[in-house]
Image (cartoon, rainbow, N blue to C red):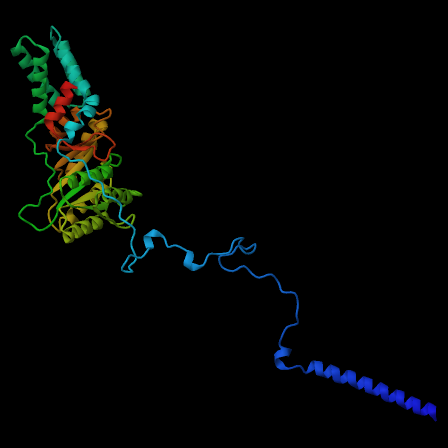
Length: 403
C-alpha cells in the first residue's frame, strides 16, 4: 500500500513538472507585439560613414561648429546685409596714342635704318656711274619699295644729284629724305575714322580684316586701347567664330580697358555676331564698334564671299566707316597679292602693317599705298600692349634716313 501511494506521488510530481514546461514555452511564444517585433540582440556593426567622412571611418579631428566657419571674403555681407560681390579687376590706362611713333622711333630705326644708310653710302661715292645707280635700284627693290616707285625715285635722285653738283653728307641726307617722303606721301589722310557722318545717332563702325597669322585679333585689341586712350568708349565684336579661342583672346583685350565684347557660339555665323555687336553698341551709346572678322585666305573665294556678307549685314544698320586691312610687313610682295584680293571684296580704307620692328623692309609702306591707293594708318612695332602706333610719314622717313 505504501508503495502504491509513493508511485502515485511520483506520477503527480512528474505531471506537474511537464505542465510547467509547457506553460513556460507558451508564455515565451505569446510575448507582447512590441517585443515580438524586436530583433534579437546581437553585436552592433560599425557605423556607416556619413557625408563628409572618409570611407575608412570618422575623421581624426572633430568638425568645427557652423558658428566658427568663416565665409569667403567675396560672399561676406556688407553693413546693410547685402552680399558683396568680388571686386572688378583694375582697368589699365593705355599710353596716349599721340606721338607713339616718335617714342618708338629707336625700335623702328634698328630694323629700317639699313635702307637709308645703304642709299647714303651709294650716293656718297665720288663717281655715280650706271653701276652705282643699278645698285641704288637693287637696294630699293630689296627693301620692297616696288618696281614703279623705285624707278620713279631713281630718276628723281639722278636729276637732283646732277643739278646739285657737290654732295656733302648733310645735303645727300636732306635730298634723300625729301624724295622718300614724297613717295610715302604725307598728304594722305591717316586718321582712323570713327565718327559718323550726317549727325547719325550711332557708333562709328570699323571692320578689321586680313589673312590668318597677320596678328589681326591682337591688332583689334590693341586698336581698342588706342581708341580708349583717345577718350572713346568701345564695343568689340568677336566675329572670328571659326578660330578656337579667338573670342576669348579678344575679350581679354577688351576687359583690360573696360570694353564690352559681343560674341556668339563657336562656329556660328560671323555676320550675325557683327550685326549684334553694332546693335548693342548703338543701344549702349558707344562711340566705336570694332569688329574682328575671321581670318581669310585670299585664295579661297568662298571665304572671301563670306567676308563680303559680313559687311553687307552690318550695313543694314548703317554704313561701315572704316575697313582696315592687317598685313604682315615681313611678307613683302606677297602682302600686295593679299591686298589686291581683299580690296576686290570689301572697300579697304586703310592699312595696318604689323611686325614692322623685325626683319621687315620699310619699302612695303610705299608699295602697298601705291598698289591700293589707300594710306598706311597704323603700324605694329613690338609685342607690347601699346606698341601699335598711328603712322606718321615724317617720323617714319626720319627713322629710315637717320637711323
